[in-house]
Image (cartoon, rainbow, N blue to C red; front, side, top):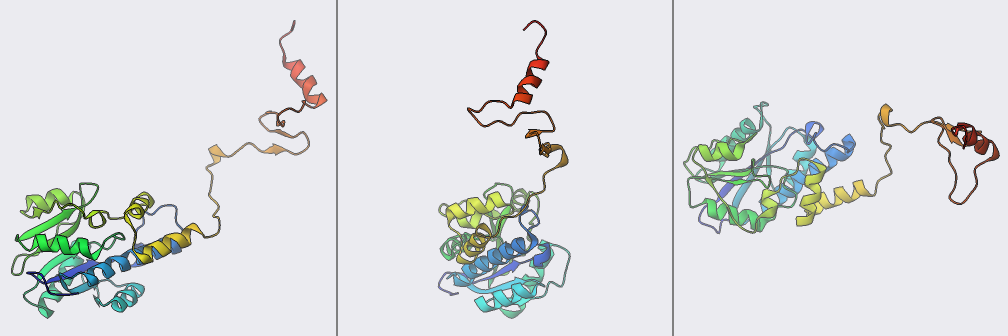
Length: 267
């Protein structure tokens, strides 16, 4: 963290309790999903702490693992007193930051930006220092990954569905900057994680992803209507009367007779 830009920023990062985090990472076991969520949050916090425009980082979370990881990285962790949503948690963090470090700009940053770099965040916060309120839209085009308010300005984050439109309608200036793909790319699904990997994951998320990829094979439940027909052990035939024959081999004698019996008369 440093103070070598025109405005020093307090960055607030809300993180859910891991057991409830990233439920849309379908296909992962609970332990793997929690590990990925923790790693993504840690990489996001690490990028914010390393950002030259940032004076301090406040993480709002009730999760003990998040607290341990974030404090080790240099962030201050406070409890989520609101317990009622993302924007409320951000307001709790902003109040704490304003009371402790008055005169700083306030920035709300989502915790699921595993490809974020400190240079990207520096570029965005530097641009944000020229307007009262600003935001960065996500890669999908409808959400928000960063919202900022200058010192003395009202801090009113509007994260959630269609937050890009709602921030814009409230008067915040959209920062359409080149070269910030990691800041735009939040991760909600495994497909999002794959796309973020093409940008370049932080070290913790990369390790978590590799651990999942190298783990033991997991069984997948197949719906009943897609189950293969049971095999008939003695005949080598499935219950649907399909013949299972290796290429180039002849049908068994009983099966040839069966086939002939099924042909129309006269052939």
